[in-house]
Length: 216
Ligand code: MD3
Ligand code: FE
Image 1 (cartoon, rainbow, N blue to C red):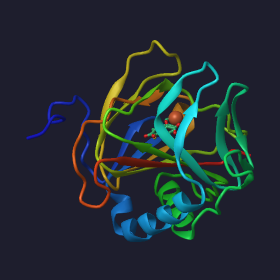
Image 2: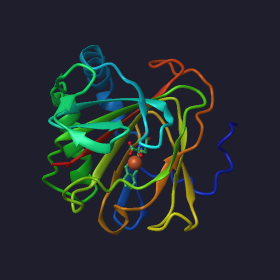
Image 3: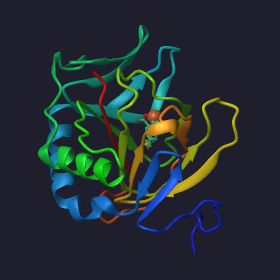
Image 4: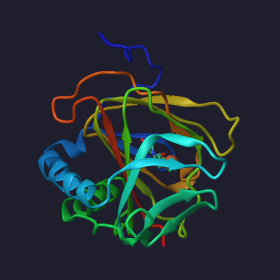
């Protein structure tokens, strides 16, 4: 028994359409975990994750970095994608092959063949870290899906409709789960509830989320 046993939406089939165009692939990344975690260490060594400042002057509880041609940048001027990491003034680390392969495989299984991401955001959650309800709409081509890979501690992911005040659903995302978000619900509001404490055998006291985007 755990904290999440009574969540209303708890699909456990290997492939579930959780909303129109949004497909959950339970555990798909597990068979790639060794290569993914090794590559993640390389990315982190070149571009350490840190707490971004929001344009409104807040500090995010999540720590973020990026790899690929474009990375996610936030400061008092606003949010944007950038080819340069402002912390190092160098390009972001290249997208590791293991990342690109998994993202393309997941997108194809979800019905989006030919997905070639140019950006991967890495979000690290320590216990208590969260991500408030938001939309991802700064990518140039909104027809491309977003592929999200969860690693480490489980979280409760929350998603709603195209308006902030629409009713939300909750979904538990565990190590290795992959969510492909495209089609009619690409612009759905979504977020992550404060991470519960715990220990993951490979990652310890944290959750890491990779989101692959076609941003440019
Ligand atoms: C639904 N990350 O980085 S991943 C983000 O777990 C972000 O770190 C969360 O939201 C995380 O922007 C959620 C699942 C996800 C990602 C992007 C989406 C769901 C999405 C874009 C549109 C709709
Ligand atoms: Fe998002």
